[in-house]
Length: 584
Image (cartoon, rainbow, N blue to C red; front, side, top):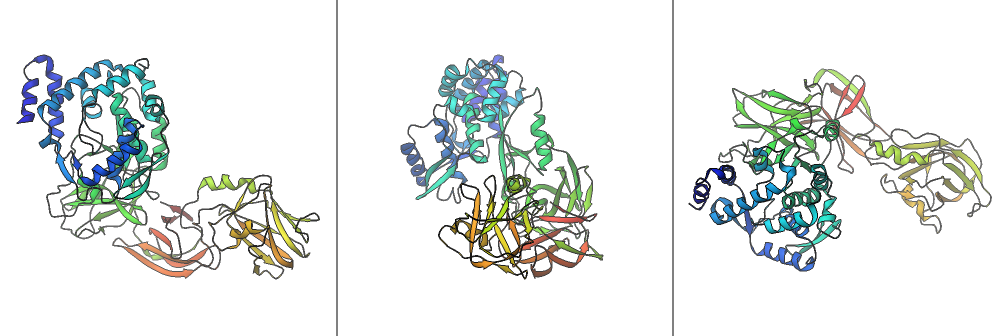
């Protein structure tokens, strides 16, 4: 009844026709939007208000929203629905003040009315209780923005976040401590979620048309991502588009106030959490090449919805859904250059219904169906793709010199060799070609360097280790602890030295430089798996004795997964084609 009064109010005068349409938009999309109240949230907000009393509205609003990013956030809270709680006075005041503000903002003149409704008109950013902000909006406009009436200037302020310090005075800290349900935790304001929320609130207060886009699960590595997007009808940000095409994003969604089609949660069938919300719109086609992909299950299924999963954090995460029609699923706008697995959730757990497939960059589907009539033998050196940044980080180590002495001060020393090459796996090695024996050894460089692991070979080719915890030589200890990602750092003179305890002749020295720990390492146990369309099948478990591990009887054309059973969690699926391993 209250909301009907809003429509009646704006239907009286033809001049209010746009306000009437705006009211229709807000009311039609209210269901599902709401806020929470409760003691735990009150205590949390009171703590923020007392500790950060001098901080800006946007800073505290972002920290309030951080409450709902914690585990068990809504436990013990009461939810209030906008459609039931907001009265006609609130909505009329809000619409009138927003339309008045829109007329003063020339950067909004290029937007269509539908875009104004979606990106400027909504009265909420996250889980906050709706409030009137027009006085704060006008104050910010009159004191900080009125002289910046150029669309690009305003857009840059929001998109880059530079305006956070200029408009709201004072420096936004990198992180903030918050008291969540009795526990003091650090909230990262430089992470993608913190930055996106800061910019969303900045956009709300400046009336800039900004959307929040997100990738629910990276398809080529662990984690997820979200970011802010400035809505600009004049041009597409081609640099941003190119960056996302290169990075193969899979599926991208936009958080909206508008209700969008979503799986029917009223059914008894399990729906993955991300797809239970109607407030996400698929915008993958705005970022990368897409293709519609039909999938027919290998066996008949009795479900309403199917999903496409990407491999993320050692499991398949659903990123797209489709309804079952005539025995198949048709997935729309699927991002190219990614490996997907068709899934269903009959009992709450993911079940594969067909073979994984590669949707290549041309939009062609390549079914990864194992060919057990053609078997391969592979020598595997990594379980995760190489990082280019490691190569540049280790480049200063090139031409480092190995010196040896029987004097701990190295007043008299001999040059033994020079590191001339760093392998793709970030190993550098030398053969000394010397039979002389020395107690003290060191590596000298012209720039700082890191060593993850150092292997020393005596004259018989046996690996040996220096003394540990020797005063003056302790910095090198992490290089000899059999842990490739604990590092020994060169000293301020760019030297790393060690004490053998007695005179020894070294025939060779091998150094694993800065690395990600994802190469095959001797002493670790590995398992190779392939996907047969219903699940992972083991091809055996082996201990690596070299910097590689070899497996045989591998079906051709299969999707593979090398697991390090000893340590680590960064692992990627891969294929073997035309003599090359390709990680996905």
